[in-house]
Amino acid sequence: MSLQDFVAMPKFAEYKERFKDHYKLERRPDGVILAQTHTLGDSVQLSVQNHRSLGMLFKAIGADPENEIMIFGGTGKDFMMNADPEGFKLEQENLPYWAYEYAYKDGRINVSSLINDLEIPTIGILNGSGFHSEICLMCDITLMAEDAVIYDLHYDIGSVPGDGIHSCFEELLGVKRAAYALLTGEAIDAKTALAYGMVNEILPKDKLIERAYKIADHIMTQPRITRRLTTQIIRRPWRQRISDDLDGGFGIQMFGHLAKDKAVHSRNHIADCGAYVKKGKKNNFD
Image (cartoon, rainbow, N blue to C red):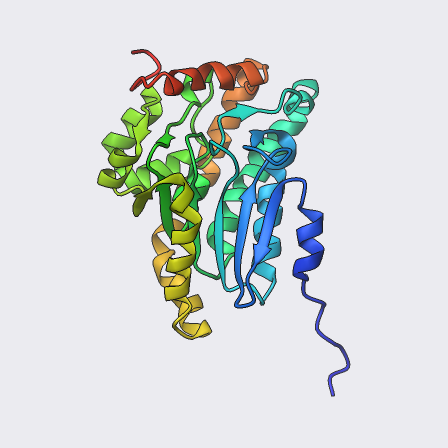
């Protein structure tokens, strides 16, 4: 008998409770876990607090051997189209500290954890329009609501798009399309996203979770080791992309923030920039 026991693994009931203010978590008996990000039960509003929670969630899900497939998406009518009114107060009060803690460290962990800490198949659900769509787009399979729009707002709020969205867009869109999307704030509707190869299927919003579970059922037909080792194969391009340019992109973005000595994030910045999407415009300048 060994002199030491295994370190206790995280239990679903424990982290479901721990993350309840940020994510609605459900898990079927077969280990298919559904994680839906939210703010007060409705569409998530970006903040320093929920930004940090994402990597923590992925690490917890990845560390639990009872999880077999993760379905990840949003709650409410959109994926992320607004910011918490006080969500960046900490950044504004101490920009040098939070530029590292929130933007550089947490941001890198969020993206890398999705690719490296989850050794199970992942299905992303874009339930509506929004920014930071890379979290769903970088899942192994991505479903998108037929009325949703993908766009990146970094450039139009005076920020460098180097926090993972650049890695995502360049991998999925190629250099030219990614450059256009990042410099112009291009609004990419669901049909275009499907044609570009950003997502796998587009469906009515109320059919997304049902379809995700159906895909999960198919994935679950094969043995556990086959499922997990297959993720090692299909994630290789993402791992290479992240290894090559994620840290550098974040570093450049943070230099841009600190060089201006001004916090970039704010509720008004994000809301104003998202308004053109709601009006059906193709770009923020059109």
